[in-house]
Length: 79
Image (cartoon, rainbow, N blue to C red):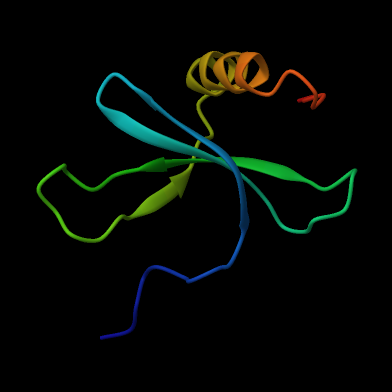
């Protein structure tokens, strides 16, 4: 069976935990105007490995982006 999940490498800018879920703010490069993504860990707490998916739900994205914006005072995040 082929893997449904694709491995990708990102640079982690910041992480936070909201409502029992871990979220990562990542970029695909270390350039100043790099594209950012917010990833949500789907693994349960007792699981050894994390399984991240890109947050696409607008409400969830806005809420998590607001938290990261407050954590990163010197970085400008735009949607």
